[in-house]
Length: 101
Ligand SMILES: [Zn+2]
Image (cartoon, rainbow, N blue to C red):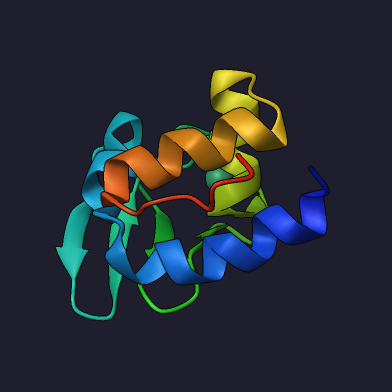
């Protein structure tokens, strides 16, 4: 499986994902269009996870500057390859994967 294919499927999965579950380790707090989360790098609760374009960005731009897609964050956090990532996200979103998986 190519990673580009995985990312394509991810676009379908993202809207169905419960971001509070995906980012549970970061203790998300609902903040309207985004969640306030603990920064994976500096561990201060000053980072945001966007609901529309799932990426994590630390608000301490000069002291930390952490920025990552949710995909990359989760992948590093759980040491998964692209295929396992996709399976895990599909599971969480109750999204059926194509037969070829
Ligand atoms: Zn930070």
